Amino acid sequence: MAMLGVSATLVLAAFDSTIIATMLPRVAEALDGMDLYAWVGTGYMLSTSIAILIFGRLGDMYGRQRLMLASVVILALGGLLCATAQNMAQLVLWRALQGVGGGMMIATAFAAPADLFPDTRQRVRWMAMLSAAYAVASGIGPFMGGAITEALGWRATFLLVTPLTALAAFVLLFRFFPDFRPRHDPERRIDWRGAGLLALALGAPLAALELGLAPGEHSHPWLALILLTCGLVALAVLIPLERRLAWPIFPLRILALRQTRLLTLVSVYVGATMFILIYYSPLLLQQALGYEPGASGLLITPLVVAIPIGSIINGRIFPRQTEPQRLLIFGSLLLATGCLMTLFIGQGSPVAYILLAFFVSGLGLGFLLPNLTLIMQMLSDRRDIGLGSALVQTARSTGSAVGVTVLGLVIARLTIESGIRTGLACCIALALLCAWTSTRIKMKNLPD
View (tube, rainbow, N blue to C red):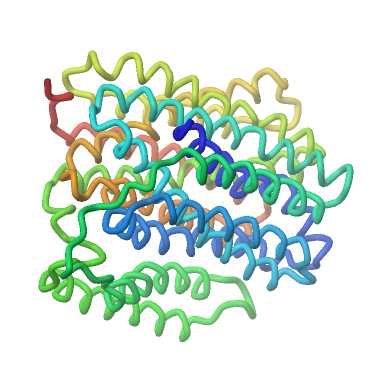
């Protein structure tokens, strides 16, 4: 029942991040804000990227249950505020607030199985369950968002989906998830300076990317340069600070191993590829191929429904692999194949072909997503399980933010169809880069 509560939080996070995909073209048109289209996704992912590492560490230090409960409340409040947005700028702001809650939730939920199941062989099966819950909800999310938008309007989507799901998740977590707390240490303190510097080091460069490369009057190169400089300075100050503290917000030991650094890179590539597919495929189907929001959501459903299928197959195979990183290579090659098939979707493409292209992509992600987290947990110290899980999710969210932002800028300079097809070509290259990087990861499977 505790894991059911954790799964419910991930269902909420999945709904929150994907229901916007199919309805956003309609929202941007209603609020006259196509110039801020990319910022709705970038703002959410930016705040998520910042929150994941900070709250992943706080979960290690103080326990995860209360953080998960707080994240549910923030997401529900953000959904209600999004429903009241009067312009795109307000929607971007409230989505950024939801991103903080989403980051708290992701940081704690993916680390929670390590609290309940110290045995990695047991944990791999539960990680498959979490991936399945997240993926199925992600698959339902775009269709639900499109269907409710067509029937009741886009505001009803925010009013109905997020608050109701949040209520169920809150009750399950409060009732069943144990309030595990680490042993009290009188010297333990929250590293507020490190948290602020970490937020600036992560967030400022991503914001600079959006501001510096935006088209026309929306471009602010000098502000982007200032933000980039601030991010680099924050990073330069953060590293020596974290080395001196007994309880740093980001212990640098997590990156001491070459394997963890390579896994972090792979997570960035996977995040960019996954969210370019999820975020812009509905736009391609609606704007370039003429599908309605509900139909486009239904067509991309195999992308995320295939993820739990791949995760379940992976959970069966993983314990038998002497070198589990081979599953990362296999998943990357499947993902590259699916992206290649998606690139060739055009006018007149059979529906079966479109569904198959998205299914193959999702199957590849099913071999990648749980393994990145599980392998990082295997490589991390017990005291850093939450931080290691958060590092994978942060890298994935950062890749997502960069990928969505850059492709949004490309689309603004080209046509929608040309921009998205350029992004799909980049997805193929990123998936192949995942496979090559994974070949350099050397490790053995679970200890007896």
